[in-house]
Length: 165
Image 1 (cartoon, rainbow, N blue to C red):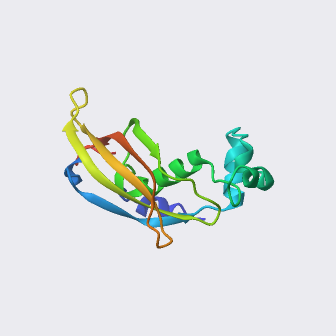
Image 2 (cartoon, rainbow, N blue to C red; image 1 turned 45 degrees about the vertical axis):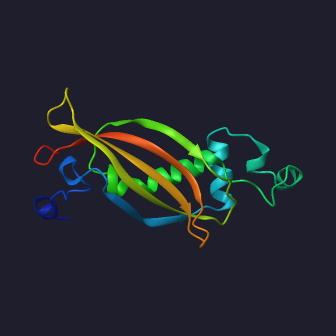
Image 3 (cartoon, rainbow, N blue to C red; image 1 turned 60 degrees about the vertical axis):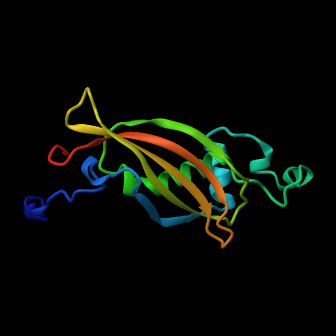
């Protein structure tokens, strides 16, 4: 096989850069994700979350649920993941999550969608090639209920235009 394709290959830029964000800008993240029982059991097992609400249907029913409950950390990380393409895919350091709030439990078969709003944007004092952007991300049910499931704020160090590698 020829290596000619390597010579023609070029890196396509991904994600938004610091210059692309403005305070108040809203992103309706275009992917949704339906969580099923298998997702929940695998995630709970791999993360050693052995709360029986997440994998034992009779236990969940005895404790007032119609079926097993989706692990809230799976809910959070799914919504977080839905936001990455629009917000932080260009790279840069993840600086943390604040004010993580779970508003309701969800069950297998629920589809989550997400929306993020730029809350703050500032130059980095220590890295002139980057800036810090903070977003408020909300996760909703997509089943017509549109009920808020989870919300949080997160910040990333985002490269400026002309400095991204």
